[in-house]
Length: 416
Image 1 (cartoon, rainbow, N blue to C red):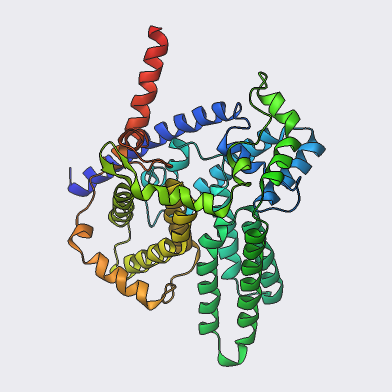
Image 2 (image 1 turned 135 degrees about the vertical axis):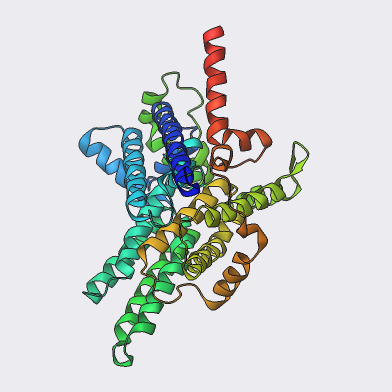
């Protein structure tokens, strides 16, 4: 058996194991999500609405409230079904369109699409944000029906920000770069249309983001949102325990900006198991970058450099989220998957990222770390915790750690 055949066989077995564990994690998460109530960060993020007035992140919750009343289906069930449907659609899109970059085993690993399965955030808006990014990117690279496409793109981008302001950081820089690149490729006499498109979309992005900053929420609005779902909380939690006050993501709508930022800054002085937590997160980001390069199937240096430049651009674009919130695992997920989507959707003709990022990518790729190929089994023992780093959360975020934790829990149940 040749070395290439051996690697192919290892990849097949790795894919089978990772798909099996990810499916088990998805099934477990789906069953538990049916009982997530007012204290769940996952379900409450979906249910933020306009019951207390216009507020950031309320668009999707208002839509769910409207649809649930028409169809007479519980809003939490709609959110769960929609989340899993979107997750499945994005996974299918990546397996179909990103096979030249990554194997299916890598795509379903905790490095990429396995993260929401192992870390319980399929039922959040992160995957929805990435799906909106795909639609936006496809519209941004279209060349026909310029005016109608621009208007549709502006509406979708504004809606994305109103669903969750994180979309601004995920999409604004790259969409702007894609539209400006169209301007560069146009003959001088036809520049006006791409410039109109760029200006319109940029205005939609900035105005919607400023709106979310102004209408960020208050304790009064959070209480009104919480009360609007009163019957739903009673329906989910028959004990009616502790449902008088807002909790989780709905409660966070009432936080001041200083409170939210203070949570992130509190990590600067945090140690866990004797390890400095910010350093642990920096190491995770470096390892993720190493794995993304080392596991890539791109053989040509220019292709790999272009992809690495996109990753650097997205990391810088998303860096404000690391200050505004402490769900670092989610931000890393958005960073890695959005980078793959951008590379897949936008045709490779010239550089998308600014020159600075291309030079940095070129230097990084020549570093000795990125000449080391990660062993195929590394994806079984590596994971990214959703937040609150510790040695235990690091171990449990990996497929093997997740499986061992659940076997341990099952064994205790059988023994008791």
